[in-house]
Length: 411
Image (cartoon, rainbow, N blue to C red; front, side):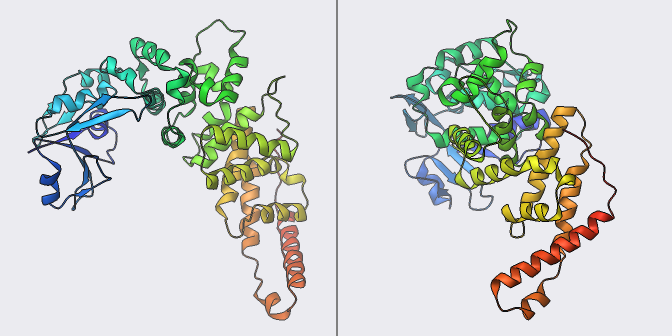
């Protein structure tokens, strides 16, 4: 039995990136060998096991053969006879097909180390085309390593364009699409993920609303889509990615970018609550956003524009915002809304100074400190308790606002 560290851990170590998860391949063993050592199998019929001590994943070396459509149409074969080379050859990109042995010696049959140094995302073999999910994976890696100046090999991108066949792409489960999209959003340049999907004709299948926006933006240009053009279309997403790594805020920024663009085919009336919620719902469904995150996104987008005008709102209206977003029970929503509002202004004015956001957060912090115990003890009727608490908070906010030096950045 021989054990090798493989994949992302090896790649990231060569890149000088922090290594979080480690994956191991076991050659010359069977599932019974690992079970006898105390390993726990993950799922039935799949040769992946958890180490009882480190909880890291150990997979038996395996070969995959195409037997049907889509990313799930594969037959998995594993035995003692499967070699490390055979296991590495089934992977997607050369930079993900590098291994190290117990002594730390690098095993690199497809020149992945050279591609890392040259900053190239390159497929291993023609079998790359058998799995349509790899379009999304390469797009995700491009966004992940965009700031490190990685590019997709010309021949790899050509294959990806050929792979964008509706029958094959449509066979990918929404859950798998969400997993790749979620990982892309967690990176520093998520807008580049959508750039690659657009260039490979995949957006029009899974994200038709977004594809239409790109078509509108580039229809008059004969130039190849470049960094500045993508930044222009998904500008709020680009800005927010520098401020936070929270996925619900980044998807909110994506929705803002798409909802702001109007056309004869895509009518997004952002001043109408009903239309706004419907459009957000459509966008989120296209990327299979979980219900909990979708709810957060709706709240953020419905209220972020109010922060721009916060200095013109009465204390009562400010208090109403906090109550509508259930801020007392979920205070993290205050920061999320303030961040999106700041990103919106930064995007418009190219200025990251945004006192309204700071004012919004401080006003909430001030009201959080208002004591309501005395009111609860004195009043027995629920409505009167609410009225007195609200009145006390408005009074406190009025007093605090009088002492503030107001500076307004107009949108």
